[in-house]
Length: 159
Length: 187
View 1 (cartoon, rainbow over the protein chains, first blue to last red):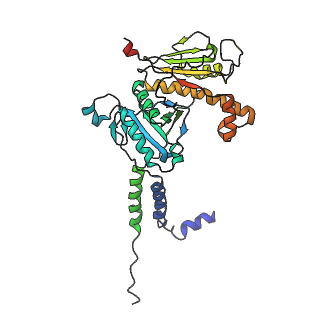
View 2: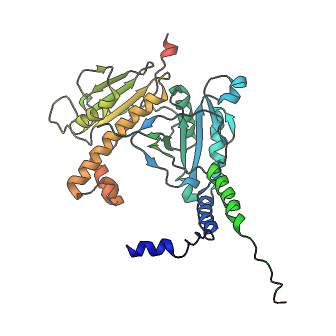
View 3: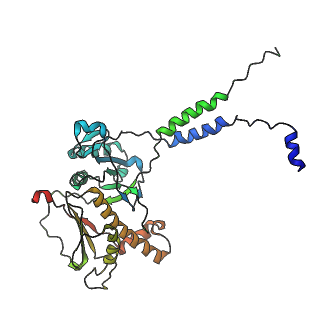
């Protein structure tokens, strides 16, 4: 008992030092700075991807290109309507643009060996009709960019 | 001199500045968690060859069709076509077809001979298509995993490249996509 009394009667509690607080915050800051990757292209189409189970991580992100397909997001709908569109890089595109896009991406990669490992991630809205997707797939085959990831969200396995 | 000390710089606001920066990065961060279903598209051939593809025994072929109204039609081997098939039971049906090993006469003789043909319509929704493709891939992954556990006692992902290839030789993934039908044009 005396132990407790001593503490209360004696000196006041020293104030908690906040001197190390900036250090902690800076540590967090550094962590976020390292993991942050600013989004290169703002996405102009709505893509609500389907839920699937057999997901695989994209191995080498620098070798990966994105193709977005979906209805234009709300600020573009006034001009473009609701029909699904393809987005490459920063702009809307036609299926015939994919060839040039693929060649441009290929030219960016110096190592010839890595060119064969290039992948394409298709982020496609679930509502899109397959006609458009098939057209894109055909163009990708013609451009010899045949490694495709269909992006999806994880669906937990039904028991 | 002794009483003219340089006053200590107040570091109290340091935390505030750091917090501000922290919040900025928190907001702009998008930790990338992109993952997807992998598929290697077949090579593009400029002209359709006149050579007929080798005839397959009908019992070694499983046809999966998705109609324009997102219905699933499954025709496994010589068994009659099942209309309005449930996507969630497709995986087990595929495994049953692939690993039949000649047990019943109307499904595949050997996994190495089995072929799956997927056909969709131009009006099929991507959601349905991807779910079907997912189930078919899930069937193969399950078979591979099972084979791996039987032989090596570990999951398929934990195997070396050579061991994986060995299993893939035994259960090759022959999943081909037929040209899409076009329901709208037929009308």
